[in-house]
Length: 186
Image 1 (cartoon, one colour):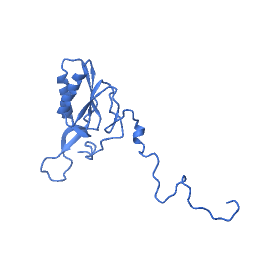
Image 2 (cartoon, rainbow, N blue to C red):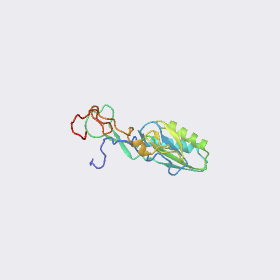
Image 3 (tube, rainbow, N blue to C red):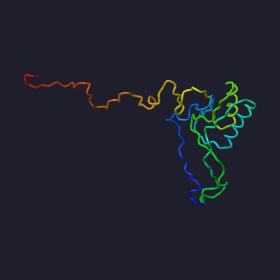
Image 4 (cartoon, one colour):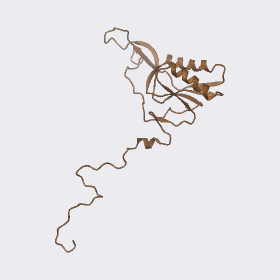
């Protein structure tokens, strides 16, 4: 099979912090956000979560937005297969979901408790822990909510002044030695 057909098997990194992108609501009023840590979620698991939301909200007027796409092919070899002989055959589609990323958004004429219940059912059927978010909630960097804190304040060093090196004199502290010169100016 040509090299361009299959992607290499290396594991690209999942962004686990340092960015607030994708952690707030864009289109909807309520959302479901990954809470514990980053992971790979398969397309079938995302579909099960989406179907659970649709079953709970059946007959209501709403719009469901999916913020993640299962665009990574997962390949696997069979059990008890010796090393080598290529990458393996295609198994399923998956997506890498970073920590605190919004997965589903919901917009419509729905009470908040009903939306909470729908997202709770979906979160129980999917791997990992999830949290309910509303429009206007602060963005999140890693697992730190930026409520009154800016991203620049998070990235600055914790100490404002560096510690002095031992044995080195600073400009603020004068030398304790006195001059013993015999000049009249001294």
